[in-house]
Image (cartoon, rainbow, N blue to C red; front, side, top):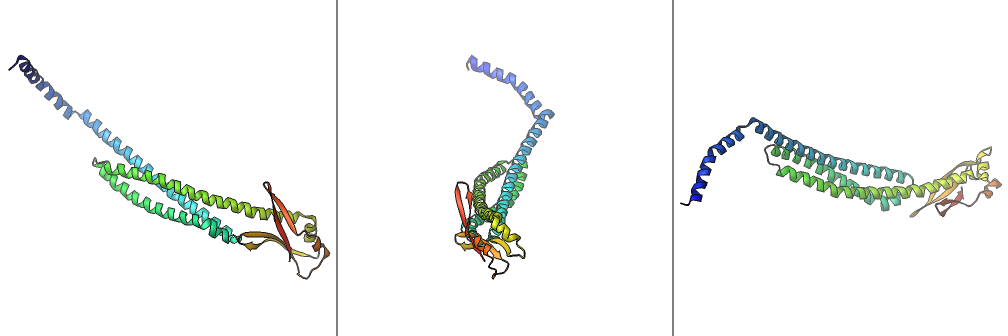
Length: 249
C-alpha cells in the first residue's frame, strides 16, 4: 500500500468521530427543527395566498361577465321600448348571447376550481405541492384567456349603446328644436287647445327612421296656422345635418 493511500485512510478515520458528532448535533438541533417548520409553514401560506388570489381573479371575471350581460339586457329593454327592435336583433343579441355563455362558463369554472383548490391545498399540507401549483397556473391562464373575451363582448355592447344613444338622441333633439319654433309655440299655447301633443314616431323600422309628429287636439281642426308649420326639421350631428320630416295629424 502506498504512503499516500495510508495517509488518506488515517485522516478519514481521524475525522469520522468529528463528522458523526456534528451530524448528531445537526439532526437533534431544536433550532434547526423550528427553522424547518417555519419554512414549511411559510411556503404553505404563500401557496395558499396565491391560490386565493387566483380564485379571486376568477370570481371577479365571473362577476364582470354577469355585469356585462346585465348591461346588455338593460340596453335591450330600453331599445325595444323605443322601437329599436331591428337594432336589437341585428346589432345587440349576438353579443348578449356571448355574454350569457361566458358568464355560465365562468360560473361553472369558478365552482369547479374552488373545489380543486380546496383539495389540492390539503395535499400540499402533506408536502406535495405539484397539484396546487398546476391548479394555480391553470386558473391564471384561464383568466387571461377569458378576460380578453369578456372585454371584447363588453366593448361590442358599449358600441351598440353609443350608436343607439346618438341615433335616438338626435331624434329627441330634433323634437326639442321643433317645439321651440315660434309657430309651434303659438299653436301649443292656443286657447282653446289646438294641439294635443308633439312626439316622435318611427315611420320606418328597417332601418329605423324617425319623424316629428304634431298631433291636433281634434283631427277636424283646420286653423290656418297649421299650414305655417315647416314640413321638416334639421339638426347638426357633428359635421353632418340630420333632417326629420314633420307630420301633422
